[in-house]
Length: 535
Image (tube, rainbow, N blue to C red; front, top):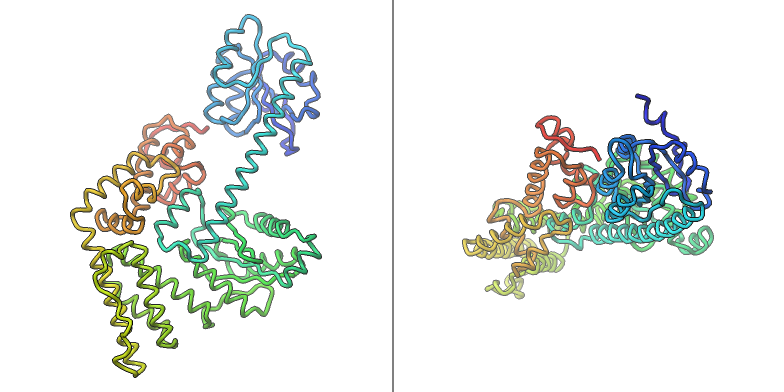
């Protein structure tokens, strides 16, 4: 049998802005006539491929996307209805126009019930075909505009997430992972943060960008996206006059060369700060502080953070890490780690004034109490006259440390008391909600907390203490177990399994599955059995 590509009329693979049409008809004279009957380019279309059978069309659909399927209904072998049903599943956005003779009009009526856009009844006039495709072009253009707006909204949501993430506005790692999953983001395994800071910003925007700051940030985004060809999402945001980017970890020389090229594009009107690499996305708030410190010490165009430098920013970044560590420790009930964390806090604070240390400790305690929503459970009161007993600096620091440790232990005792048996029933209900709703991509711990009427932070705590797992780990396990089950059952496409396990993106699902099981869904199927369709 001749190769499909040889038998089909096809055009070069080009992106000319025209809508791609796949033409399917068993009569070559019909295919030839349709190719030359209309001025396709003027209408906004091009016939990307034309084939003479459903089998050939299905083969093309495995590796190509088409905006329009123009297909005959009655053909030898598998008819057009089977092709329509197939494309409806694998490419629901593709528009379908059917070709039908008088003797197959009933087939056309059946096809219309499958969501077909229009039909051409053979023999049809040029005017009729022009009308059908003119209307179709208008509809596709309208949908494209809506999709562009939706894409812009999605990018805005990602930027909003990063904006608050780097400024440490999310106190809970659970909340961060919740949002990461809801947005379908794929962060690098290890990453650095890059901060573009523009010199003489107002003058630069006016002279080089006609006062359009959006054009500048779009340019930086585009050039960075082109420079990085890694398998992750381009994640960025704007903070004031600065552009912030999450970039995969790389050697310092490679990073310097890449970023120096970006600076060339921007006429060297910027300084660039680069953080140390981090593994977890909740560490990006620390990385952001490091980029600011690198910029404050800037002597070159590209400036890398050096941990040997001490300043207010490095102090804040280290304290942020400790505060997040303390919340995580309390959330997981790890009492044995509290002394080590407290020691680390006071080592960082050792050169600060007593008032500074005292205020930081109070803020840290209040942050924990507020996060876990346990103010009403707190029986003791903070002693604001703590320092009246001594005027010796070292004694005051020792008293402060003892006071701070006692308050943290008290918070932990409250959380452990609340996490006793009465909460098991509540967590069982939460687990039941997870099993019923894990397939919803927007599902989150917030939704569970709202449904059982307790605070987000408190649910995080008792969930971990009762089940032994963090909520997001538990949800991931449920989703991955069901993904494995669907793979072994067979008969499911990868994108269908993604949708049935709570992932909007098949790509994000595949990356998550690979990270969890150490292999892709396809590799898992080959190793353990099951049969999944490619489309």
